[in-house]
Length: 69
Image (tube, rainbow, N blue to C red):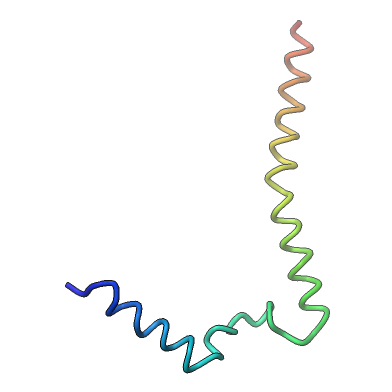
């Protein structure tokens, strides 16, 4: 079988000799401010969404507990 070094060498050399591969993300490295703003807003939204959902469920469970007491 191939060892990890045989698989890692083409990947690392590709990033070194072809820097365009490392900057392949069209949204992150674009020059348009609208695209960057959309990327940041989406990132913030997707980061906060699980916390808001868990807080909502916790609040609902708390209210259900208070009703039965």
